[in-house]
Image 1: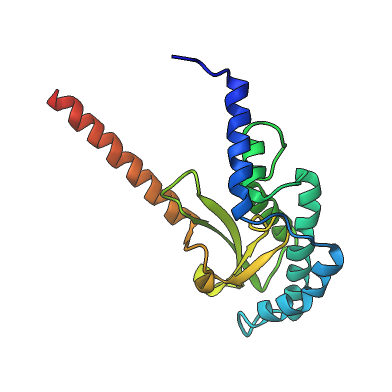
Image 2: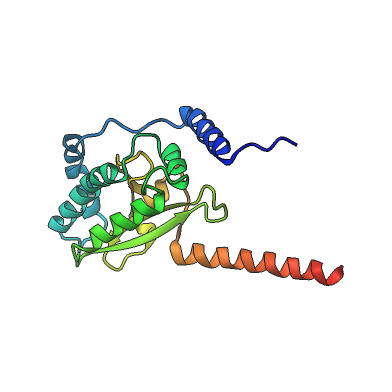
Length: 202
């Protein structure tokens, strides 16, 4: 059996990911000007999440959600499609930029505003598959549920914010993070119980 050096395997994995990325699109040509042009539409949509939403808070949230990812893209040194960048992060070639990093940083930045009429949620999609698990931030009216909010996903297009009502996201089906974590723990416990059961029959 021929052993392939670790570095060669890493290069092969990266090359495979680069080829696959040809079907997933690449980083959008997105600028601060482009982002600012979307502030009014997004702010208007956030303002309609509930009658008590402060239009000024909606505008502030929209501006941050659209422009802060551009700063993160530079900090993460994003030069490729999200999947390729993920591979580079996992190989130690890039500092950050997994979907969880985008969601963590976006949530922290938005929470720093101390919104009084908006609520931030964290959600996870594909929680049953660690390889394609995806995290995001969701904004809703104060006190409203996650499914009444808007997805604010900067990872999907490498800093070009994707936003849409949670229930209208055609790519991901979202679960509240606590619910996703609970389901994951239940699956892990079931596997552990199954392994123990098999061990007892041997």
